[in-house]
Length: 180
Image 1 (spheres, rainbow, N blue to C red):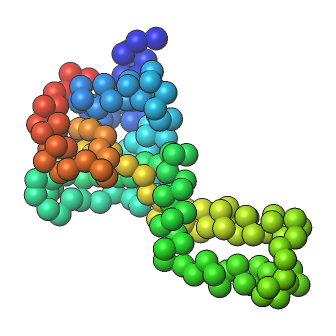
Image 2: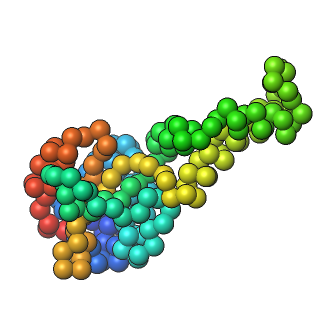
């Protein structure tokens, strides 16, 4: 497989309606061949953007500050971001109260030893339930797909990471060419 695989996959997921910069295609290739991320998490978001059905993550947003002001972005998520999503969830919700409730629902009082029987409902609540709650609230976080709409056609510019400085992302956008 070569670059044509990635290019054809992107065309397929976008129904042939979008444009992809060389920077974007190279990033997807790097993720695929380097096994860094599941690229289908990214291409599935593109498919939902192009079909107007982006609902399971934070939706399409616009950067509000320079130098990225005016560009659109959508979050994509990956298994690598599970811990961050759980941290984000529990920073806004009271884990202590939820643990108390699970214990009470299972007949335990504060100070009682935790039994192996209780581990299942506790882990379910702390991990799965929290993850599903976050997903259902369209609050899943991850990294960014940055694009702009030009004449009714989405032009996918780059994949960016929250840890990057805005001016570094903008420099990469400025280097993007559209041969695909």
